[in-house]
Image (cartoon, one colour):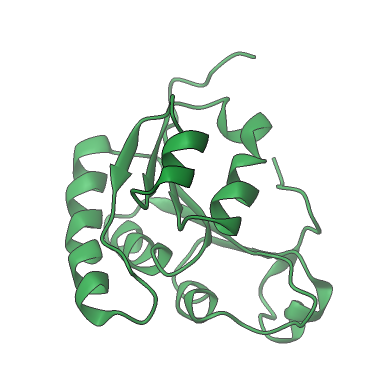
Length: 157
């Protein structure tokens, strides 16, 4: 697959399910030069062993101190790497990077992942208003996020 040299992707992900779902999109992200911002744990190390990674401050969910640290980290990393896109499927690590991307005029894409009980996530509530493209995997979430686009279980390319 031919790689695009004029684009660079920053992939931001918490560990566990969010990381696994993002990893499953490798047919998309492997087309581009990229780097990851993730949690430093065994699962992440195993699944992303060959990937360029930065480690964020965790726990990040509802932790204001680590969120502020991650916001400063976001500006530092995004200024060093100069990506053309910031992408995430969650969770709490995403908002600081989307805030920094907005301020730095970097395009951003967020996917509110599928859930059987359609409920807005805290990250989704924050990112919805600042990202360029907001997608949902559950049609019922369109009532919560009316400007979102429904994509089901696949990533739009």
